[in-house]
Amino acid sequence: MFYTILRGIFGWWNREFLSEDAPWVKIFWKGLHFDSVVAAWVLTPVLIALLLRRPQTASWLWLFLTSLSFALEVIDIGYFPYTHRRSGSELLKILSFYQDTLPALPKYVRDFAYGFLLWGVLVGTLGYWRKRIFSGSALGWKKEAIGWGLTLLLWGLAFRGGWRYKPLAVVDAAVPTCPSCSAFVLNTTFCVVRSLEQPPLPPWPTPPPHIPPYPRPFQPDSTCTIAKRYNVVVLILESFSQEYIEKGYAPFLRSLLQKSSQVKWGFACNYRSAEGVPAILSSLPSWGEEPLLFTPYADRLSPGLGTYLQKWGYHTAFFHGGQNGTMFLDSYAQIAGFSEYYGLREYPFPKRDYDGSWGIWDEPFLQFAAEKISSFREPFGVVIFTLSSHHPYAVPAHLQDRFSGGTLPIHRSIQYTDWALQRFFEKVERLPWAQRTLFVLTADHAGPSDEPYQSTRTFWVPIAFYVPGKNLPQLDSLGSHIDILPTILEAIGYPYEVQSWGQSLWRFLSSRWAPMKPLPFYYEVVGRDALLRYSLTERPTAVAWEGTPWSLGAALDSLPRWKEEWEGYLASYGAYISPSIGRMRISSTTVPGGR
Image 1 (cartoon, rainbow, N blue to C red):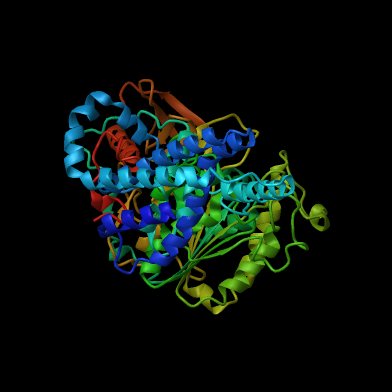
Image 2 (spheres, helix red, strand yellow):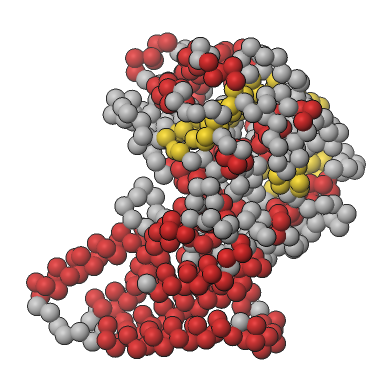
């Protein structure tokens, strides 16, 4: 109840950061899940003390921990207008700088006296109820055993956030059609604890003063509109390296790319699916140690492609044949603006077509997706993320002899998914909506290779755009996952200005670059004629890039001209992810939901 009251006060105080038609009932309902988790965390040491027959200790622990939690909630009521997000562990760091906070304390008390008063009232109320809650008479052993059994059962469910595939995470606070609502669903105690579990953010570089910060305003150019308000289907193929296509393991996809407008040198940003999918759909890769999707900063992945398409009247959906909740993809789909999610739970024949490891085989799931898409009103924006080419690289038993495989175990599953993709296009290209659809073809990341390591090959993935029966203009020859979102918006003639981290591939830019993260805090950035090796702890270097994925040239005496542009991008990223500790101030207009 107390957390619900605090959420109401938080919402009223910061109401200017939400639209007038914000779904308050949904915000409070989803917020109860996060409140229950925090309550379970607070009660954990209290229950231990009670099990040890120390009710007095338990009562003081309850008062202290709950008061501390309420203090964090109250502080964030007034602090939110400066950060536009719920605070994480950085709030504790800021409070620990006593040489800064103590001199400013009188100003805080003056400007936010209501907050101090509110916290005092809450603590006083807790103190009043402490003795009454913990002074009950002893029960018989049978009643006590039943009581403890029910209590521990409820505590366990609350601790995980309910009966769910994975424990509750920040990304689960997403509210469809309301990107800025997640901060109002969350509570601060939850975010602080979750951020303490995460590796620290890296020391982002200082932004060059003459480089405009990212994200930058992007207005799609009408001269680049080649599929005006077409349907959009983004096909993200699991682990589909461009190398596999070049070596002949995906003959259908290779033939499809020849009919498409393709980026010659397209690069993924990261190694993992949980990083690659948001890089494609939100233009935000993960430049820290962990996927952004798994951190308390997951709300920064909004807005996404679905958000923009919904604003223009599109019906949006996300398809992935894995367990609902895997990699938090269903929650991310909501953050990115996809109103419907179709996973293992929604698939009609899960037992028949389960692959034994991850979810539904690609071929039947792609057929299911094609049928379901046909029921959508147009225009629609759909993402389909395959899974069969993921380890353990299995193929249905009745199709084992159909695919010869290659030098690596993944090659057989690549052949299977390529065949499944062929069956999908054979089905959809006969349907009337296909001729009005822009298909986007890419991979979440590259897969294993038996070739020597080279980042320009290890991150090399297909990036292509296809409309059945239509010749599309040529794309730029160099591109990245972060460029896919603005490229889609420009292709369909999107009428609104957006904040963009990438550049449209329909525009030919002399200083274009594509970033990759081979290791935490170490990046390799490909330009037209050079590869920049950039570490956050060492001096950057550059080598000539000869335009082939297998070889690099000699070391260069000077760094490429676009090196400062890359530094400005990375510094902006750090400030955007955590503006309260970033080295630069991000204006509220660059933050989704800001005013």
